[in-house]
Length: 259
Ligand SMILES: O=C(CO)[C@H](O)[C@H](O)COP(=O)(O)O
Image (spheres, rainbow, N blue to C red):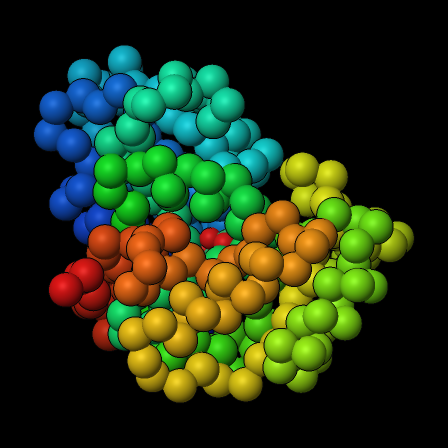
């Protein structure tokens, strides 16, 4: 049977997931592991569920939304909601997907509308590992051929017209209130009861603080709960992964590591 490009992408995701889990799931049973959202994370959870039972049976897995919680339950893995993580306790490792990853490991996330939970888990993880396929690699973020939808931004519903106007003054060329889809009239509502704006900006230039500057400007708008830029810069680290695994079209896995 002929291999379709969908098969190729699914195989790339699966191999990247397996490699990331082999290399970054702790060798002693971890107390807490974070689990992101999306289609790639399905392969991560399957790889974790196949590990030696002693490595997973006492671990609490922290989901980043409804989808990942159901996925964990289907695999018989113990779930702990992020608000029940004891204060000051770190998550040993968190795995997640991404929509776009640049050469500095800054990411755009939130294609699955779970960016807030994904970020609150990522920033509490000792190690954050991104798993993706070859289509997600960019030199700099907001390259339209990689991720044309722009930056997902979670907003308090009543603020969306105001935030839209402010994003335009920040340089957004298009801001879309994400629709709920065929089975939901009206906008997409996040797991937190908020709306999502997808804000397209021109492709970012290279530079250490370029992503950080835009991220901070967006976060400074009243009504913004969180945005899908996971980044690092001279003023700190807000969810940028230590490492990203990309399943490639030729059946290999490329790794990008924080310098
Ligand atoms: O950020 C996310 C969800 O909010 C996902 O991790 C991101 O959209 C990647 O998804 P996929 O693995 O399906 O390509």
